[in-house]
Length: 321
Ligand code: BTN
Image 1 (cartoon, rainbow, N blue to C red):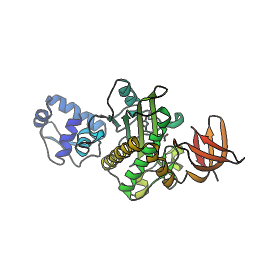
Image 2 (image 1 turned 45 degrees about the vertical axis):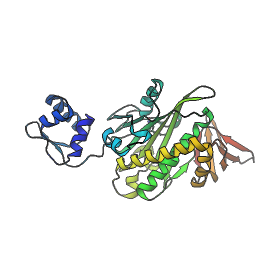
Image 3 (image 1 turned 135 degrees about the vertical axis):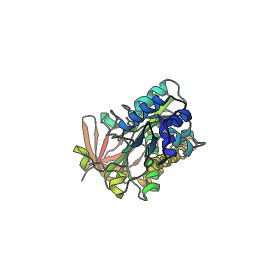
């Protein structure tokens, strides 16, 4: 089906007969008919009918592997791209691929997630073709304690991609949130499979709110999108290509230089790293304090109101006023 979409997108506005489509992508005409039906169900505006042929009125903003591969030639992330129109969670798929021995650099993408996972058991709203829902499979030779640095690194990569796309840099909230105007525009969920001293693989799931026009319920006051912030529709393909290029160069630097490639940069650009009054919630415990920089492995230091400096290993950090 991705082949059909690529053919139509590359010839947008040109009517192509069902017979030619069938020949070019090597399937039967009835299969072409079935796939056109399925694409329409998934919201792609395919015009025409079997008698005349089919065409797209405009190139759809769908993240097809062919288009991505063309843009990512020679890149770590241009080789194994798994694209789903609808899936429960790209992190779930990437974990399975990791266990099955899939090599480093695999990219799992979805137009829509039905059970997108967020941190601390939350759900990630993943409406069709509105955001970027992507998970990257990595096999770095690092110890498990360094894996959280990849979450922060992904935040830096996504920040740079958004800055290049809209000219405004999001703030980073330790460890994994991207904020525009104080509202959440993206999040990262890293999961890993490791032995005590060696990571087997890490999957980095990135969710970015791109073309949502509004959010409902609890998210209405806490989430935003690039579309809401700029007033303009944004190309998800451009943003994803930027993100994957930034990620690859940040990742290579991390492999060569270690934590020094990430921690100082994160401290420099995150308003949360130092001097921010925060509430930290970890399990049932909550305390207030002021952030006091990052430790060597990227863990947040917080000076509690009783004067004690503690290291936050996991948990939720929110601004306290
Ligand atoms: C968070 O801020 O809570 C993390 C959100 C991570 C969402 C992304 S979307 C792609 C990938 N697949 C998932 O199920 N979750 C991550």
